[in-house]
Length: 278
Length: 292
Image (cartoon, rainbow over all chains, first blue to last red; front, top):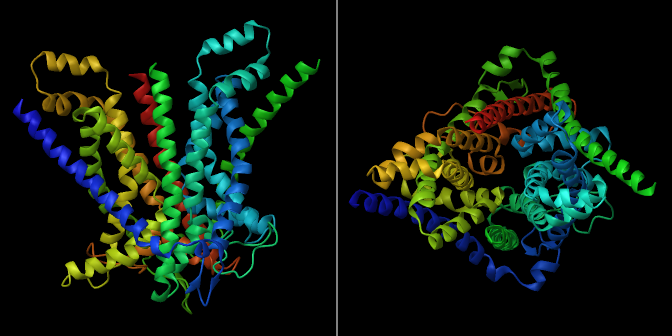
């Protein structure tokens, strides 16, 4: 019908224009910094008030923060989800954990930062450090991992559990040898999404773990570190125009990392949904 | 024996993890509120919430958050006005009018869009969009860092969220409703707008609430692009300082235990309260959806 064609045309034009604008912005930002990227840029320290040198400490720092965050959020998140999906009965505590997870998912990242500052930096005395920042990011990413793992575990057919129990396996054996391995690939996809969020997160690090400018690597977990997103913030908002090439290079590197991650997540999801259809 | 012990210890393990998760939530409320309420020992409740004067670094410091709150409202409102219609149109196109290949391609780009770190958009708005705005509207714009610029950048962040959630809501409508309408001779367009959208309204509302909550809490874009002036805006080209921008911009330099420190924590409590309300509404809507 004519009206359907018109609707389709108009809505299609709007959608494709939107997507084109996004692709143009992403493409512009990636390509714009490409000439700056070289091996030297990736592995050297910033020099001369950031106008020369590279981003090595930010890459390393991002990796430190990410590792600490995952060390906390992966075990706690997956086990909490196992509790919700496999162990809990419909009682008050289960409702409490579910509600807590929903609320945590909605809390702004900067509020997690304040909590991290108050608990880790001040109460525990960790100061502005890799451990404070990493744990703060870990707590922030917890709800992503819980929700995703919970969904993945729920998608495992009930017959798997029944077959395992019928063969004499107990709850723990059924859960950790059958159910979790069966959903492993989907759980991993969820962890990758959390990694993407943690790598790009800036605000909570600004006052829990970020150093703006360091000239040697942190010697331990109780020292601050640079990270790629905070570096981008510092270069664009605090330093003058003459660092712009370095800024463009840093943005390009961060975007390439994050895009690679999210494209592989998208591909994994396609494969998973195809498996489900079969 | 060993098997039974392992069984028991894994039960303890998962319950502990669940306890930690819930304890974190209580911890967040405890730490923010216990520091935040101390601001009322120094300044009055009325001044904090109803004064528009936020001058924490002046000699006679003032801590009224009304201007910051109005900044958050202005930026959020304009972002919603841009991103909800566009997100809605794209979601309808994806759910009802696109072929599989086009659908998969568009969906991939929206997923990518969701992965752009906010600091990158902040930097883009700060370095490029602000300059373009000055060139395009030289009469109206006196600073390129303003509500309009921040809302454009925030729309890019919020859009994939709206598209995905609204599409899910549309697809959750039972297919027989659609088929019945088509069988009665209605065209796809009126089926979408008269049958599917009304049926999906609580899901769409849920999407809008979750998206709004995220926009209010977004920090880096408004910190870098909104202009940073703590004033009540009169036009969309005025600079503002939203709540999250005040926290992120000032927390690093504030003296521990000062009035300013407690005032920032009280702003955190306000943000926490806002997100709590939005989450509660979303959870209620979701429960309602499951019932019908």
